[in-house]
Length: 280
Image (cartoon, rainbow, N blue to C red; front, side):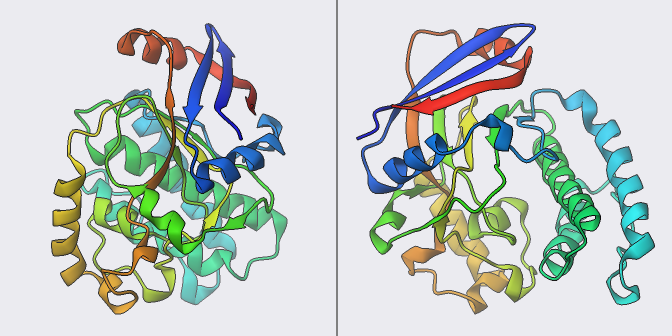
């Protein structure tokens, strides 16, 4: 059984983070998957340091709008991206622009186009996270890898999905092309196309390390989701009582050791390389 996950980061500072892993099946499967790859397998279009610096919003908007122009050069006429990121409606922009990624990605074969689409998707999600609560710092590390290291979730695994989290939590991340119920709920996206609503059904090496507290309790999220579900297109895809909705993320482990929260966040902020990870 795997008991610990160790992550080494380096930049202006260096830090080793050690997590105590859960003993349940999804955590143990994930631990085996992450040990089969290394940081060099991280997706190059995605910045793992998420929401550590809100001063990059303008730069990211500029990047995304230029990328939209580049994509529209080759996108079919009926799939052109209409409009760019609206700084006066961040969440509406994310919901509107994200639709184009699953639409085009499922049939695209050109490696250059696939790379552009991946950057387009990652930039939208980064901007969405940066602008979701502009006055709150919500720093976390997000690791998405390339490759097909996947294991199907079993029905009993779904009881481990949780919407709330705490500082120091290690969580399994969503790994499919589409939007899952918790993402739709968080973004207020009630009109997502039905074929793009994809609840999580696999375990992959994807994971997040959270360095902020979710101020809302689990029962608060569940209650709000029931209200959202009634006006959302999710209702046309799955029954709200089906555990396979996978509302939230699976908790994999907890950061251990003595640390000051703000000091740790500042240290991680000053790192920019993922040196190594391992489970043992």
